[in-house]
Structures are given as C-alpha cells and as structure tokens.
Length: 114
Image (cartoon, rainbow, N blue to C red; front, top):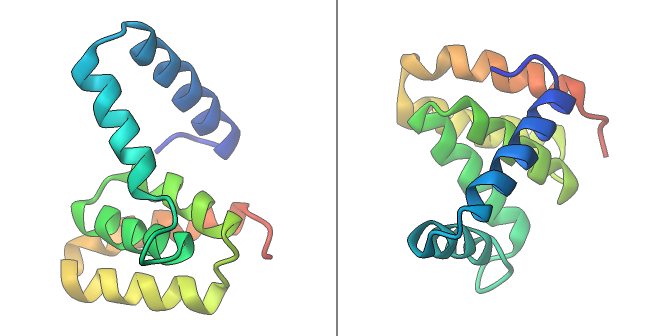
C-alpha cells in the first residue's frame, strides 16, 4: 500500500501518463473502456463506484481499493454506506479480505467525511 493518499495519487497519475504516452491501441482502449464503465447509466456513478470497491476488496487489490474509496467519497458515499459495502465484500470474499478491510478503513480515515 502506498504510504499516503498524496503519494498514491502522484504515482498513479505519473504512471498512467507514461502508459498512455506509449500509445498502445489495446491499452488505450482498455483505459477508455474502464473510464466509460463508471459513467452514469442505468446505475448511478455512486452505485458503480461502490460495486468497484466491493470487487476490488474481493480481488484484494489495494490500489483499486484506494482508488474506489476516493471516488466513492467524491460521489458522497457516507460512512454507513461504506461499511455496508465493506460487509458485502467480507461476506463474499471471506476472511482473507480482512487485511484489505483494515487497509480500506485506514484509507477511509484519511479522507474527510462528506
């Protein structure tokens, strides 16, 4: 896990720019698909970000968890909503998710409540 949200953001932005600058058609299309997937559609953005958070918890990807926690907070997810989503992730993923649950809560504590 990156030490701070600031270092996470900096690294992510820097590396995404480097990856996209390589101008690989497949990679660029995948990045575009990822961005489009989280736009409002039949489901609102807030719901999609919560789904992304749960999937990231179950897949145990700390970078993805951090990203979706930040996006969820930006979309107005409340602490009770976060904990409901984290509970779903724990039940679906099992006890192996617990270390990621700890890190997710630590990240959440770094963000101001909305």
